[in-house]
Length: 228
Image (cartoon, rainbow, N blue to C red; front, side, top):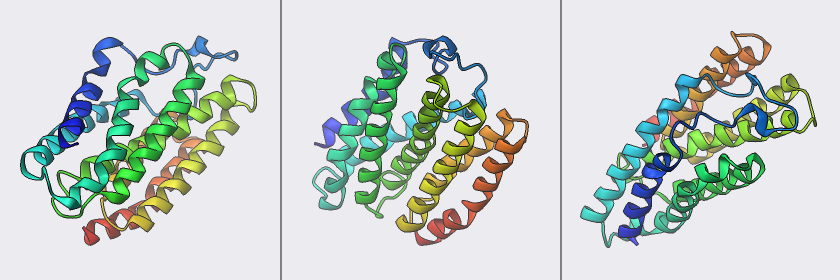
C-alpha cells in the first residue's frame, strides 16, 4: 500500500505530460462559450499544482521509507490512492468532456477529504499538510467546475453561477477547516484560490465576495495551525 501511494503520486504528477499546455476548459467546450468566466481564478493561481505535486511525492516517499508499517499512516492510504488514481486520468478526460471531468473532480475531492480526515497528526508535514493543500485546492476547483457547467449549459448566467459557487466553496471550506481542527494547508489553498478569483474579477461584486470568503477563512486556518 505505501508503494502504491508513491506510484500514484508520481503518476498524478506526470499526468500533465500527456496533455501539454492544458490551461483549463476551452471556452467552446460548452454550448454557451465561457470566455473569461468570473467563477474561475486568475491563471497564476494554478501554479499551486507544482507545489501540490512535489509535496505529495515527498510525503508519499517519506511514508514508504519511514512509515511503511505505521498503523497511523495506514488509514489514509486507500482513499488517497483512489483520489490520485482518478486524478491521474483527469486531464485526458477534461479535454474531451467538462461534464465527466466535473464528476471526476468531485470524486477526487471526496476521496481526498476522506484521506485528510484519516491522516495522522504525527509527521504532519509529510501526511496531513500535503493532503490538506491538495484537498483545499480541489474544494475550490470542484465548485469552479460546477459554476462553469451552470453557465456553460445555460442554467444560469455567468455572474449568478459565480456568486452561487463561490459561496458554496466558502461555506464548504469553512466547515471543513473548522471541523478538521488541524492541517491549515487546507485553508491556505482555498484562500489562495479565492484571492485569485477576486483578482480575476477586478474586485467587482464576485471579487468582493471571494475576498470576504478568504478573510473569513483566516480564523479557522489559524485555529488549525495552533491545533497541529
